[in-house]
Amino acid sequence: TLVDYKINPTLKLVATYSYVEGKNTEDDIYLGSRQISPPKGTANLNWQPNDELSLTVSYLYVGSRKRFEPNADGDYVGDQGPISSYNLFNLSGRYNFSKNWQAFMGVENLFNNDYYPARAQSYTYGGYNIKGLGTTVTLGATYRF
Image (cartoon, rainbow, N blue to C red; front, top):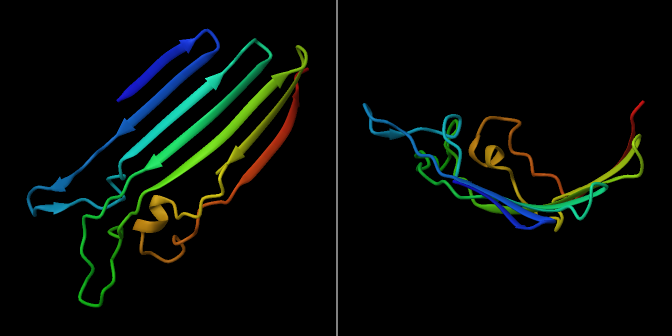
């Protein structure tokens, strides 16, 4: 699903949603997270009042996917761990000072949500169980010759 809507001359909304499911029909077994991602939604609201300035608020929704049961020891195996949903907001912007100079900024995980990315939740292999980044700020400038 895709929404691409110009609210007014300076404000634009773009949104997506995807849901995919898959099974090995021969064995009637759901496919793991290596093949199938959990539901995902995005929304981007972009404000561009002129050619010099642009600000964007982005939203990411990752839905839950809990298709598998733990084994007899209570553990999940391979790529079959349960995925719990989470939400993230990001902010980005840029300003063109001149033909050559541009400043940019970004704030990822704006509200400092505590979460594990979907792959970190579903993969039971060593080294994947890592939390997502907290609030991360990027500032910079670009000069074009």
